[in-house]
Length: 535
Image (cartoon, rainbow, N blue to C red; front, side, top):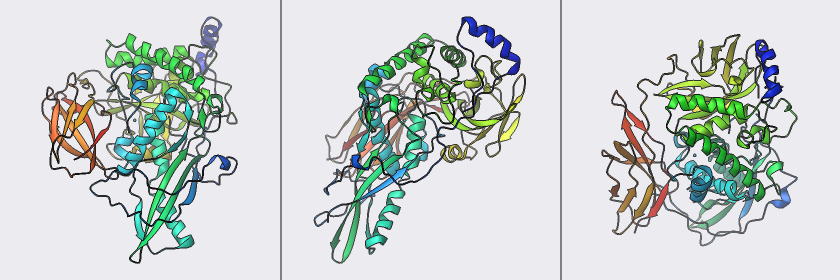
């Protein structure tokens, strides 16, 4: 990660350092694991259990079919080891107690403002993502094992004539359709604070089994017993796959500090909040000039060091970016964290920064290089528009001293897309609060009842500022969300979904909406997903 120091500001920074926070210094080029590779797993093999065959929990979706399991053979076990695309930084149901009392101190509807997974994952991937998100959040709040068994039915069942090595290759290929690296990358983007413990530069292990049964000359294969092993940063670990419960207290302390900041500025306008968050982060921390390419990934990359109240604990650009996104998420301001190569002045290096959305337009925000003594200290890299550029070639921005170039890495472009609606497309319009329509508050699904066959009644909390609601439904665990209803009244808090299939489980999420001055809808974030089986 890179931070450019403005030589002109060097003298002033050194004077400030004598009586205030240490001035940020030039950083060595830093990489925190850009490789996305598959490798053999060896040293921790003994920690991986051998699974017995058996039925897994299932939820039947409308478009999924489950094979009969009467005559399944013993489960064969397979392992896939991958290092996630770590350049992407750091939204099944989150742990309500954690969100309420530890992270958000508000209703559970106040969830992070952005969720990449909602837009880029398929139905099956979203199911896996939702379950993992719930497990990850529990560990973040309590510590404990990061060896997670997946209980959701992912519909990985098919018929085949393959045998032996050909069958194993087919099973591996079918498991590969989950694109587990993409799911992990979405979790890293959407849960930068819950994953404070995750050692993303080490191998994340996926293990799964498969069973076969033959009926009427047809062989049915089913992938079962999926588990994931997420490594823990040494400083937070009490084992390779276990978060030390004591370290959770440090995370809670950081969350409390961040909540206090957000509450302090709750009555301010959105631009005022953004400016305040930038200034506060730059005052709470300094750039960690001692980090090198060879250092272990850990605390300097996390937002905890920004909010821990300790002047001696400093971060690199990932910490700055995560901290800014966290405050924005708590304030329901749409903010993203991206990565790539930054160049200009003294050279180029890997970097991480933020993108802030405003009325459908996107603006660069580099908190690291807005700190005292950097090229953007005068505001040139905060809510800024480029001089020139494109998503494919990167963008050039002007500062008081030099021009800076920001180029997205391949993984960022794959994740966010490169089309005309991509958040990576920077606007030429200056950031302005004029005409900015406040998003309505998120709602919460309060219950789903099933008193009548073939019907579900969904209830939710009234959202402040909402003109209406959109309800999305997923049938089972293997399908994508579809729009189930548009409620054109902000005071309506109940909807009956009819003509549903008996015995099937349906998943629901709701978002509020209002209108801007042009009559376009402005949406809140999504509610937490809730499900119910139909009688």
